[in-house]
Amino acid sequence: MRGERRAADGVALSLATPLTLLVGRDDGVVQSYYGVRHEGKLWLVTAWLVDPRTQEAVPERMIRVDSYQMAEGPWDYDNVRLPRAVIEGVDQGPPGFEVRSLPTSPRVHRRDLRPLPTVFP
Image (cartoon, rainbow, N blue to C red; front, side, top):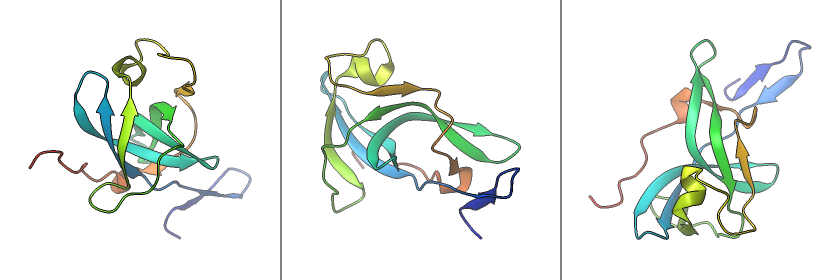
């Protein structure tokens, strides 16, 4: 079944679906990023690390951005605002940002990582 694999004990493991986010940074840059729903929360993913054996990817870093609503158009979420320092991992930025580095989940399949929409065609 697509989006499902089995752990060593035979339990089915499901893969997450990558989302697209349009992010405005505090330095004026507007850029597309991947996102994912995980543990009932919305996360921005700075980059995906792909395992060449399984073709599954995990986030390099992810930043919680729950407070945004679904959008219509090429992005699943737009108008997300984040400090550049938080996105680039320079520091945690202002208090209140939950950041996870090198988490082991969520996992997505490489084929689901389609090119991000362009901001300015």
